[in-house]
Image 1 (cartoon, rainbow over the protein chains, first blue to last red):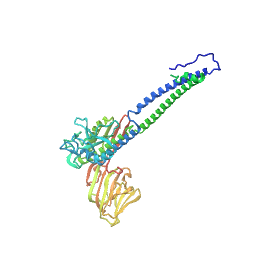
Image 2: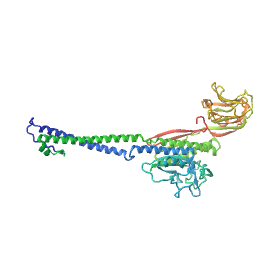
Image 3: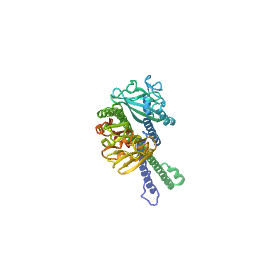
Length: 216
Length: 312
């Protein structure tokens, strides 16, 4: 790598400074080699460490935001379930159009649904520039898992988070009208409802409401 | 590479000796630059490690405990609904009720099992076998005496727990110094006293010799919610029947001095209730065992459903 230009030795005359500088330069070369290898090594270590951070999140702050969004989504679901708003929203089924009331032509909402659950979503997310999808997962006729879009605002980003809540429908639960008030029809009598009966007994089906949240 | 400082020029200007030391200085500068580079890389490493540590530390969901908690809450809600549904729809005997709640929770388990498995969680939900039998004893607009007309009588024997226990005293038929007692076991242990002096009701509790007055009211009637621990909606701590340990007989003394309504669900068979009193078979409580497992977490808990029980 380095060719030290050592002048020919003339017998080590102590009166000359050349020999001393040559020795110093030799040491410097050695040191240089060692330090260069250290740089290479630490660069490799650095590169290896880098891979541990980047794939998941770009920075610490975005992780904080994800945590907050996840907690908010969980809170929205829990409070909607506690007040019954979630059940009212999921059971507001229009048997004529075989869709939820007031959906777009595609059969799902493109923004907050016009009910209490929708208000909760709107207050929590819409005003802060956060997009969300709401999916309803249930057991299909053949016992497999099926999913239906309830609110769909697009494809989530890589930093999206999700929260879920399972809603148990009993066979004597009432289908709700546009305003969320119970009708005379029970879920077991409503053949057009998105979820078919999952058992012959009391439990009609279990709808897993999944909220996916991400920053626009 | 190392000879960045051209020796020739230096030698020409400053003479041979200075030229050599100038060459040496160039190398020192170079080594210094390398050393600085190492320091920078090391600093970057430290920063990176710090950011990564904070990133790890702020990940609240590293073990998924919140998901386990959500699953427990939804299962609790499902169990309460199943319990309510069974009593609403299948008002038959204890066996029928037990079958109903067990089947409902099995159906819930079947559907949620596949849903949770898709997310990498293994769940197990089962009703602990043989939910305890209970009997609903409710009488409305009645004098608080036995069907045979006795003032001192035993409503139910061998009781160890009650829920939704409420007493609504509407009219006073006795004298102002009469007292209506509801006794748990022995009067020395626990009794509830309701009296009326002609203008005011007084409700008090004697718990192991300590008498506590809950309230005095001039209202037309008085409602004592023993399970809820309230008199006319106002809290009264001494009403706690749960402190009476073991099994006891639930008795009424001086029942002929007042009339009104009473209702309770006791953890006994209907045969333990005084003959002639209207009863209905219900389940006293239900316990559900829940297991939630992920590769990082194993969570087990039991959920108890007993609507209207003290503290429940």
